[in-house]
Amino acid sequence: ADVGGRQSGAIVTLAVGPPALPMPPASPAPCDWVSHSSQYSGGYAAGVSSTFELSVAKAKCIEIGSACKAVTCSGSASCTVRASATLSQSSSAETTYVLSAYCRTVLAQPPAAPSPAAPPARPQIHEITGPNEGRVRYPGHIVLPKLGKDA
Image (cartoon, rainbow, N blue to C red; front, side, top):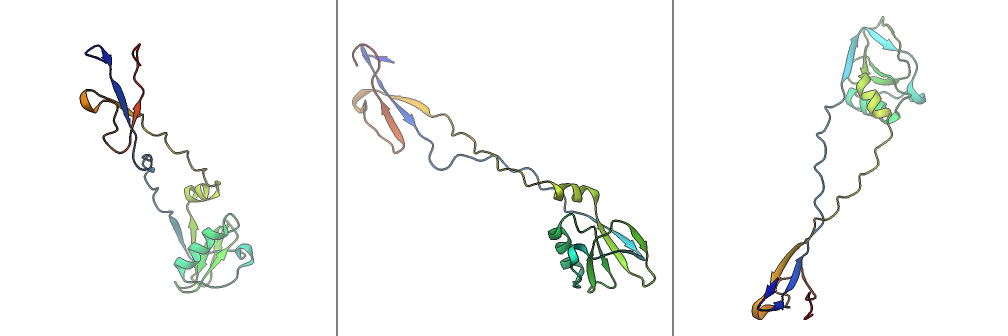
């Protein structure tokens, strides 16, 4: 701006701290396991024949990935991870838990690459005139050279 026949200096306000990141998407609902009473799934997943508590067996099945199709239990403390997607009638009152199709699809996808950080906000420009012209008055400000024919 022209102040009394002179061009005034300007300062640029810089953003302080890291740029704001976009909000993460809402978390999807937890994976559902469908219960099938009096059914079993054949074969051990990935050769794992150990028994687990139900919650641990479910976590192990997810860890194994596509080789694990189900968790079969005879009681909640004696569960195994299973390889077959085909269920058969159980003569020993076993219950089999099958991961929902949605969760199987999501877990089968490779992890998404992290999105690039958003560019920093555009700096704000403020003009300083009068006795403080050309001085940096606040941290984070940069004085730009005067513009015009008198610069």
